[in-house]
Length: 260
Image (tube, rainbow, N blue to C red):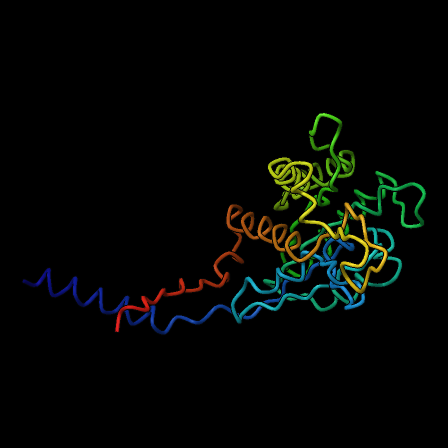
C-alpha cells in the first residue's frame, strides 16, 4: 500500500514538473548560400529557391532568416559584408545552414574561389558560428539537371562537394549531402520527368519569360519544395535539436457527404 502511494506521489510530482517545464527558447535559422537557396523577386517567378518553402516547416519558436543571394560564392558573400551581420546577430542555439559551391567552382566567374580558399572560407563560417555558441550545418551544392546519353545523371559539383564533405568530417559538423540526394531524386524521375522540378517554360507559357526558359540549375515551386523536403528529412536523420521544432500538423479529416 505504502509502495503504491509512494509511486503515485512520484508520478504526480513528475507530471507537475513537466507541466511547468520551460518552453523551448526562440531561435533563428540563418540560410547563407546562392541562388538555389535564395528568395526570388516576383519578376523571376516561377523560379524558386528551396529556402522559400523551407520557412513553413517549423513552429513559432523558429525564425528562418534567408540571407542567400543570387550569384554568390563563399568569397563574394564575405567580400560584400553579407556574413558579418549574420555573425554579429548570432546567439546561442541558433543555426547557420551553409550551402555554396555553384559559383565558387566556375573559373570564368568573378566569384571563383580556389579549392583551398573554398575550404578556408567554410572553416571560417563554421568557426565564427561556433564562437557565438550557434550551430553550423554544412550542405553540399544541390545538383544541376544533367544526364549522359544513357540517361544516367551526372554530377557537376564533384570536386567542391567533396571539399564540403571533408570539411564537415574534419570540423565535426553535421552534413546534409544535398548534391548526392538531389542527384538520386533526378535519377529516380528520369530525363523527362526531372524537367518538372526546374524553371523550364515554353515560349508564351509565363509572362516573366515570354521567350521561354531552359534552366537546369534553378527550381520552380515544385522543385524547391522537393529540395527543402530533403533538407528537412536530413534534419530529422541527424537528430538535430531543430527537429523537435518541426510543425506536426494534424491529418485533415475526410467528411462523408452521406453522413448526416
